[in-house]
Length: 616
Image 1 (cartoon, helix red, strand yellow):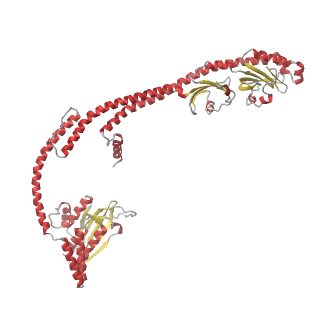
Image 2: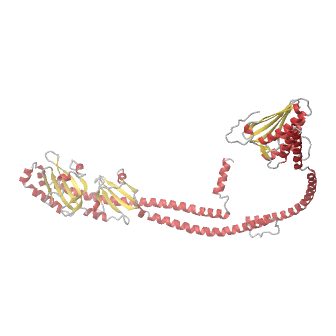
């Protein structure tokens, strides 16, 4: 089968459902026609609505972030201005000029510095503490006591080493440990620069609580359960609705992705998924992030998907109801037609189908009724013709019966030959005994009806029996040789096909002549799918006309009519019937030199054998 034929067969079987009932085909294709477009539209609508919702949520979140970022930046600038006021205060400038602890203590400036810090702290409710640290000299804060965090501990904080040396501010989030409580704050840290050496000589830390930032963020509404948080440049929380997180490092895997862009949106991989929108404040070095549960974001898209699914199920139910009615109206006439066809099959031509419509089924029913009428008329004509043929056949059977009754019982011949063999053995006539036994074997082989084919090995064995019998008859006038290779012995051949050809060689080769005739039987490969058995003799041969007549008789001669060459025609006809017209008998002969007969047969590959093709 060609590849395109296999593809067409596969398409008809699996796509067009060739072998399924018509009802199944109708239900399948009706469902497919409805389900596929709706499912495709639903999928596209769901994906598109999800994208639109994500885009709108991202745009809305970015607007909120920008507003919050503007307020926070303005607020932080205002705090930084306060730090500059403190640093530029005359008492603070005089304090930074002092070089030794004795100078500080003798001047009594510490009380003035504490008052400056208190005035700045009490002027705003969002300032929790202000601490001034002069390296190796003094630590001053609002509480008039040592700083709640020792200097050596401050210096070990993660942010301390990153304080700019040029006096510019740095924002950090941390926790102040007071004796009676812990407080989360945002600290604005500045290096103090010596007026003499212009080198850093200390640090000023202004701690601001989250009151103002909370007021700003609490006014922001992000969905039903969304919130905003802030992380610094080192991924520590600056602000979080859960104040316990302030100052703690962010452990989200997605933070690394945020560092590669100043702003954007993303969906987290952890469960449950969250939709994050973030933006970097270059001034603050902070990232403001909004977090919305992705499930909440896609509720609208889910509603669209549920609506499409419900519509699909309802539409499919309606299609099936209409399909059942349509199928019933279509299949009922077909089933009636099928039932009537079964009655016609058993010979009932009496009925006719009622034509209930004018569509294709009605036309088909009318045509079938007409066909049944024609069949009924033809059967009547055939009936009388068959009666005449039956009478002629009965006369022929009677003749054949008489012929069969005149035949000799094969068992009588077997018994007679065995009796003859026994008598010859009693008289020590071994040649006669052997010839009788050979005749008996030939008779049994010829009359056996087990199978129309045998192996070449078995056929050669009984052909050799026949040649031995002929050897007794012609003695020195006949020599024979069986030169058949081992691979050919198990190949199939038509039963009783070699003996008629060998007999034909004996009749037309030895009897007219007076010299020695040699008969040789062999087998050779012809093509990949065939081989041939060759019977060659050195008899008198045939003329071109005789050879032409034999080839003509192979396909045209009536084998029941008798006459010459009936054996070869019989063998050729049986081979063609069993194996096909490309196989059979062919002859070649040269007058006064001999005749060669080739029997071409199909070759069956045997396990473990590889026989080369031989060109004769």
